[in-house]
Length: 292
Image (cartoon, rainbow, N blue to C red; front, top):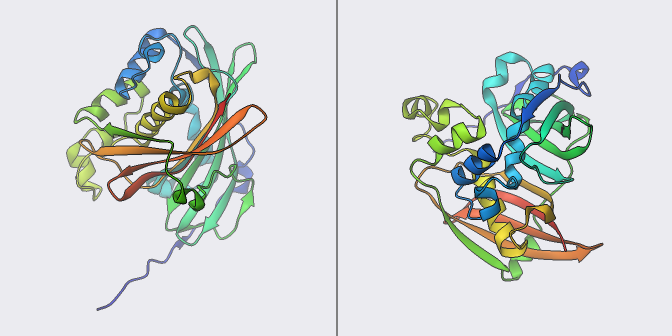
């Protein structure tokens, strides 16, 4: 019996692309789009479904065009097909509302070389046209089996799950189901047209068993689980929401989001969470900060 070791390919990244903001992207928020996104993520919170206020992960929609542009400034185009969404970390200053005219920009702040690949950290800012900061987002783009050879600049803030929490019972466990048509509803609602989520043959050609669910859709599932169980279904109280995308999710999957209380300070309660499919953790290192 033999084992093979995959050697990471050494690739030079362009440090000159760091700390360079991309062009502004503009987005007009409508109640209809807010409601469509809520319905596409099986969100049970009435204010989201009615389009009165946006659900947390809707914050990705206005920044979608801007968020990956800085990656191209740092990583060479010939490896772009290897990139996956590694982590997402939202820092909310206020909830998105219908009628908002939003302006987004993004920049790469640094990259980290690891034994199994290289992670680029992208900072995204979303403001109103008047300049009010609505949210900041840290996106980690991960290149499997690519070695940048060094670590440069700033990484995203940490949100590691404390394994000692497993000695405690979760404060809530929320069963969830990924519908067979979930990706076909989520794609237009989010503006994400990637064919791995929509075309069975494309997915199989990529070595997958079939189409995969959008990671941010699974993150949206976790967000409404947290809000309904420990946030009073009030998105205005959510100050931070972060995950690592650990495993792929497929249409038809049964999931479960488990939530633990970490502690309270300065009027904010911190929770850790994870989303699982059976024994598989599909969203790990979940962190939510909720104002009391």
